[in-house]
Each structure stands twice: as C-alpha cells, then as structure tokens.
Image (cartoon, rainbow, N blue to C red; front, side, top):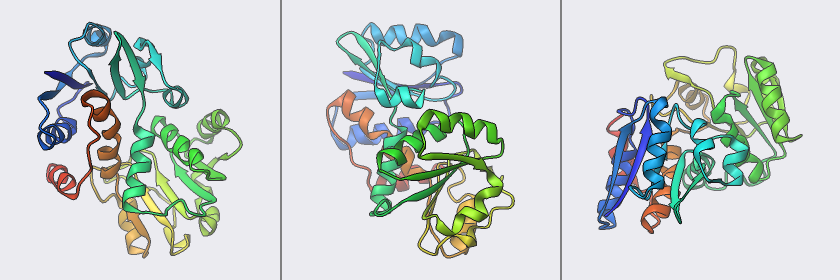
Length: 273
C-alpha cells in the first residue's frame, strides 16, 4: 500500500488528510495519507524515512517549507525561485522537491474566475512575505506586465522585487489608492485577514468595477478585505480553492491519478473551517 504524509509543527489544523482521504476513496486507491507532527530538530530524520522507502511522498507545511529545501536531492526550478518546497516525491531512491502553491493559486482562479488573466496588464500584490513568492511567480508566468508589490516595510518589498525582475514594482501600502483605478486584480498574499485583522487606509472603491479581489487566507473564509470588496460591488475569490488546487499535483505524483476539485469536496472542507 502506498503511503503519503503531511508534516508540520503543529499539524492538527491541517485539512490535507481530509482532502487526500476523500480522493483516495473517490478513486478506490489502496493508499493512505497521514499527518505527522515533526519538530524542526527531527526533520532530517523524517526525510530519511522517506528516502528509505517508507513513503511515496508527502506535503510539507510551516515551519518546514524552507528548511526541507536543503534536504532534497533535487529541486525544480519553480521551487528554487520561490525558495521553498511544499511537496516531496520519492523518485528512484531520491527525494525530489517542488512547490505547488503557485499552481494552486492559478488553479483556483482558472476554475472560479475563468478568463481572469485575459488582457490583464497590471496587478497589486499585498505583502512581501514568503507566500508572495508563489503569487509573483504565477502572475509572471501568466504574462502580467506590471505587478505592484506593496508592503508596510518598503525595503522588504524592494528586496523581493529585485529577485523577480523589472515586472515587479515595489512600493508602500499607501500607494494602493493611487494605483487602484488602473488595477484589475488585487491579491492579498499576507496573513492580514486572520483573526479579523484588516488593512488600514486601503480604499477598494477606487478599483474598477470589473476588478477581482482574492485572498490566500481561508480562515476566516470571508476576510475583512473580501467583505469590503464585496460591499463595493467587486468580484471576490477566497483562499480555500488555492488550498484544494495545490494538493492536486502531489496526489497525482504519489498515486498515479489526477484528482478533481469538486463542489462536494469544497463543501466538505468548508464545513470544518
């Protein structure tokens, strides 16, 4: 029986066992997917278990996404650009690492806001932390010409923008209201929105009425940013779809079947939030 996992510290909050468990049942696969709480000092020992053949692969969540990078035998170009690994696959006795966060972001938008990237020339990304890397990579791959990376600490946005090239333009959060009228997509890639935290001084009403506002935060499902966007008559997209879609490539790599993100699966996971 093929065995896969998700590791983190803590890990009890993870919805990944529910998602992959449903796909295993739906596809009648004799496999398992289990959560393991792995402390940082035990990470290398756990990866050794994977390399020894105990598992076919697994997912990696906080705080291990950056640390596991160095423990992989091979890492793909996208994960190298993002600087983090969230999916591991055992391949010929070697541990291969890749990052599916950017695929999850794109899959969510493609499924739930089809055509979102058609003619898209300018976007705003809020936050310059680790999650922003996957969003920037996704938007660059879709050909967005100008991505305004806004962050409270401008120097952090400047450092990150320098890694991704001239299409990423750093700036302060205070620049939002000036940029908004010419922006068709806003992405919150920060943790603001969790625990009812909110952005101050951002006027979403300045965006075009056709603009799409999306958030990578999915607890709560409707963040203050999305609630304000909806009140302003804008299109909104929550972060749960990104979680679901980022799981697809890993499952396919481990179990040989490409699973489908269905409304029933979303409702099942949504009921646990």
